[in-house]
Structure formats: C-alpha cells, structure tokens
Length: 151
Image (tube, rainbow, N blue to C red; front, side, top):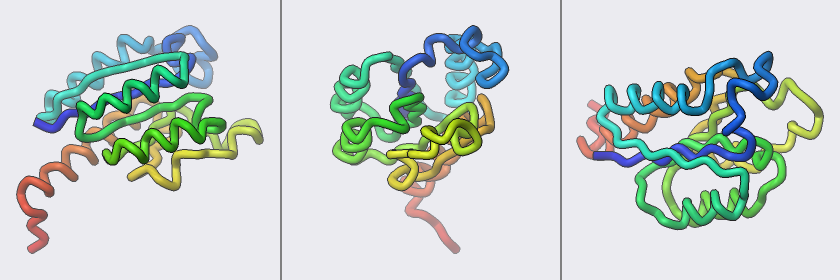
C-alpha cells in the first residue's frame, strides 16, 4: 500500500481560529479526518505530522518511511531553503498544497522555495487541495505498479 506523509508546517495547528476569513473554520483535526477518509477511498495509507519547528519537519522527512508527501509548509514556503533541500534529499515525490493562494496575498509571499521542485502546487482550493493531491498520488502509484499502461 502506498504510504503518504501529510506534512503540516507552522501555525497550521491553529486552523479554525487563525484568520478564518482566509483559512476557514475547519480545525486541523477535522481536516485530517477528511484526508484520512479520502486516502482510504483511494487505497492509500496516510500519516500526519504537524510542527511549528522547521527542524522537526526536516527530521520527520529524514525518516523516509513514506512513498510520497503532501506538504503545506505554511510560512516556511517563503523562507526555508533547508526544508526544500530536505524534500529533495529524501528522493520522494511531493505535492505542495496551500489552503489560500499565496500569490494573491502580501508581496513577501511571492517567494516560493518549493513550487519549482514539487510534482504540483495546488493553491487556493481550501481543503479540496489535499483531496486533489491524494488523487494525483493514487494515480501516479497506480501507474507505477501497473507499468504505466499508456495504450
């Protein structure tokens, strides 16, 4: 079974209360429950990790006990070369997800250290972004196990 790590960065533990007009009223626990349901429907095994500490996120990646990653790096998206390096170093494909669209927000959010090395960046879709990432992972790994039957 394909193992997916959902890596949640700083301040995502405050979902539901932090700027709900931007991030919504759903809590991180509620979001994770929805993701777990979608993963089960897609035949994926999912594990969750959230931290407000960059080094903890990097240490979790270094465990390499997953096949793919969905990462919402929060503010680290705009600042962390180290997180980018870790995502590349573990040699697992990753999908970047953001509840809002950082490109439409403050100018400092225009910098993104992950988008050019991610399999895809899914932004501004709210919780649906995680579902889309899971579907992409399921499709990719189904193709890999079936030999990529292109017809």
